[in-house]
Image (tube, rainbow, N blue to C red; front, top):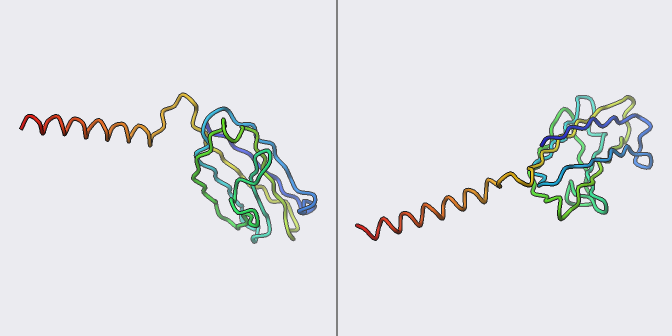
Length: 138
């Protein structure tokens, strides 16, 4: 499943008056997050993503994402049954004079969908077993 959120950041949205967009995801595994910064942000629009109690992205608490005309791509593996499925996108500016709209995209692998990495591991084990059996005949 894919989720898309627009995050409007106004000049009045300073760090003490930040924008907070609640995110409710379906059960599954968060596999990828994209944060698109529009042109003109001049690295003065900041964004972080949180679960209910801690900052998830960026991983280091003292950091934020702040770009200009750039999409931050985050590969991850966050099972919602461990982290919960309630997240929040926090954004604020540090000196812009007009509205900027960030776009946050989140890809969630459904619970019933097989994990590609596990499927590849299983296939490799099967191939190794078949090769061993065939070697026994020759």
